[in-house]
Image 1 (cartoon, rainbow, N blue to C red):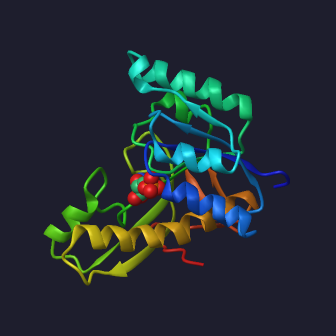
Image 2: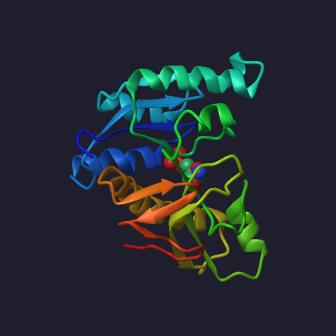
Amino acid sequence: MTNFSFAVLISGNGSNLQAMIDAIKGNQIYGKICCVLSNKEDANGLQRAQEVKIPTEVVSNKDFETREDFDTEMVRVLSIYNPDLVVLAGFMRILSPVFINAFPGKILNIHPSLLPKYPGLNTHERVLESSDNIHGITVHFVDESLDGGPICAQSSLEITTRSVKQLEQQIHKLEHELYPKVVSWFGEGLLRLTEGKVYFENRELKIGEINEK
Ligand code: GRF
């Protein structure tokens, strides 16, 4: 894709956003971030964007009575930038069909578990309470299900700690390696979603196939 540009949606720290910024700088992603949108005005990620002169937008969910109204405003704001892809990176709101249908096949999310295991919150705590010895991350296309959209890529690690904080750090490291790669695949036209199915280099990815390139 020439002139590939993507928007990043955040709610907090933005370390995954930073990984994208660094990957662009290091020529691992050929493209640019057209806009960083946060639903929280004090999100640290906004500063990360401003430091490298990426336009930022704040749309506070608190200003809207319904999810649909909030999503309509986000779609309006993002459409000004005309992104090829919308990257959710620690964006803590569930998106309604209003948003999802505005960017069909063009929304990615990263989730800190090996989906379909542990959708939702507190994944590290839950995995430590289980008898699992493998944990990991998933990048998936977003559909209307919570953390249930078609999977693009996963990466995993062996659990060697009982500390949530340490596990979280290890997971973040994996995220910062994998997510920019997946975004770059999309930008290069290697990865796409068609009729609910994920294709990589025109080959359909089967459920459970882990694509660690
Ligand atoms: C990440 O762990 C991601 O998997 C989850 O939210 C966290 C965001 O972290 N969806 P950061 O804001 O990118 O540092």
